[in-house]
Length: 124
Image (cartoon, rainbow, N blue to C red; front, side, top):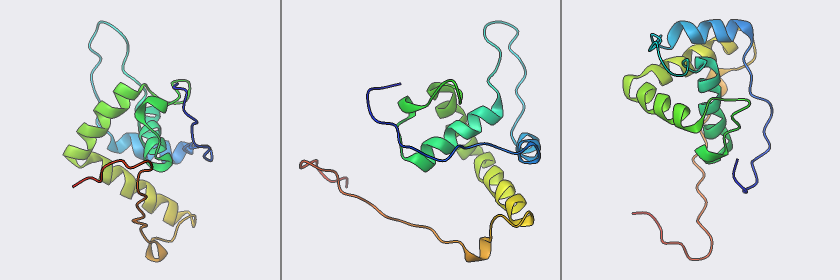
């Protein structure tokens, strides 16, 4: 972990049913046969969500709770490019709606942007 302050967030976790649904959507990868075993895909997904929700840097991922930053970044890029990430989010959101935990018809997006401090140049 870096020296920066990691944002405090509620614990991100999945129920057994959510994990089952998620793993049914995420691609399966064969073991390479040598080196480290592949990361737990649920931990990878939760690591990605943590970065997206917290706004923290990939470097701030806690390797005790999530997969490594490199692993999370690699799978995130792959899953976004192949549409898997969107499908996984929609499936989990619909499951939460079925359980009465979320009302998608009452949802909204917040597009808040904050300027950088100390005279950092604006992006184009």
